[in-house]
Amino acid sequence: MEEYCLPKNDDLNRIGQYKIPNQLIDILICEKGSIMDADCFLLKEVFSPLADQIREIIQKIHRDYTEPIEAFAVLRHLPSLTAVAEEFRIPVVHLERGTFREKNYIKTAFWDLENLQGGQTIEKRYSQFCDVCHEGHMPIFTAKELLSIFLNKDQLSILKRVGKAPIKKIGVALGYASDPLCLYRTFFNDAELLIQARKKYGTENMLVRKHPGDPFGAQYPMFSSCMENSNQTAIDFILNCEEIASILSNVSMEAMYYGKKTYTFLPCPSYYASAHSFQEEPCCASNEYLSFYALCYLIPHEYMTDYQYYLWRFSKPSEKEIYFRHLEFYFQKKGIPFSVLSLSDSERLDAMIKAQEK
Image (cartoon, rainbow, N blue to C red; front, side, top):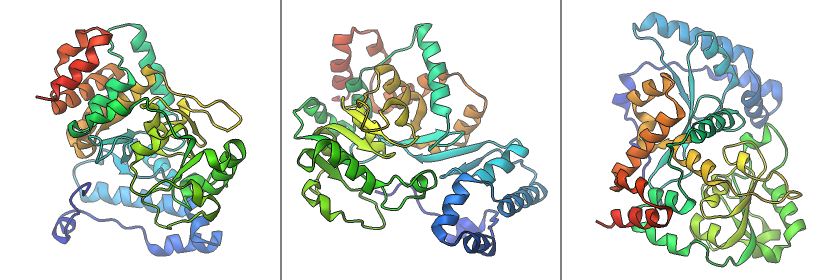
């Protein structure tokens, strides 16, 4: 399933294009010694020649167009861009596909004004959300109720499997074999994660899930006996394990909605509700955090390219306003009436499921 329609040449010819010269990046690669070293440097430091180039491009856009630049949308945090954008008071929106994805779920996205891997947005916003909750009038959902909102209608039967007896003690969700998002901060990689998990749990108690999109096709012969069946989904993997560990995978956050305790080793959205080393006891997020994360921090995938939504978010709505706007979107999409909010805890989940059977 395609995430979006790729632009055609005619589409690209109708927009302004401002490219960073390859020579500029080649200089950095030569200076740092490798493409990977250069990539890691760009993820953690301001590269002055790149910042100067971005500054010139912004000034040229201001000369070429009457409309101002209202925001930058990026898939990775780039300090060089952020530093220059701050000079011009232009917000930088960090985007990525969200924790709930096809084919099991309705699609979501991340929308963050700081950094998805290492920023403090989620901590600050969750603190504000808790303040609103203490004032009352905020519906907090259980993990199962949240799953009933995000699972596709034809996948709601998965709820009956929640709580099934796991077959392994620990599930290890791997990422890309060589990922600059990890390497620019630490040399702790998937191999280290596997070794530490084996030391604590033993291979006989491990289930390992390789990243289905890993471009390197990494193999781990020492852990071949732990590898899950390639036909299994991420949900199968989660349900088959008592606990879940990852460096910064979305699987750790998804697992909490199935009641699993987790480890997350590097800062990312699931990090703030997980344990951070195998020396700690694993954690599972509270219903308050799960509700905030699903209905306030994540956004509907459709809003990822919605200009009016961006303008609304730039107007700094309250956490309560964001929460209810997203909730209304999902309830309308799933056919769930707001009247379910007035039901007792014992009645609400059944009503939410039955509303989707119509």
